[in-house]
Image 1 (cartoon, one colour):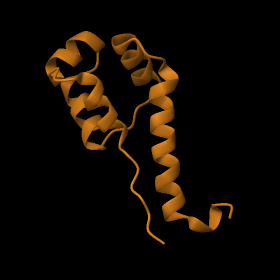
Image 2 (image 1 turned 90 degrees about the horizontal axis):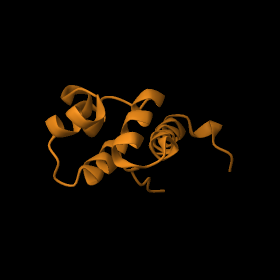
Image 3 (image 1 turned 90 degrees about the vertical axis):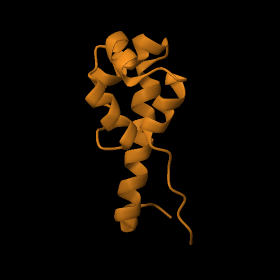
Length: 87
């Protein structure tokens, strides 16, 4: 069975940035450019606080960002622990 890799939450963030630089997003959101880069590369998860800041910046809900992260995390864990996934 082939496993489809989920989309990193950071890929969605890049889409929302729509050409905006990491520096500009940092200024608008209150996150650091380093944090933004780490989210984009998948090295940092979107926390509740980050979700609130992104939601305010992009006029979305914080749940959007939390759900993207949760969906990704669940996929990663289910691949690592297939015995825990209901058939």
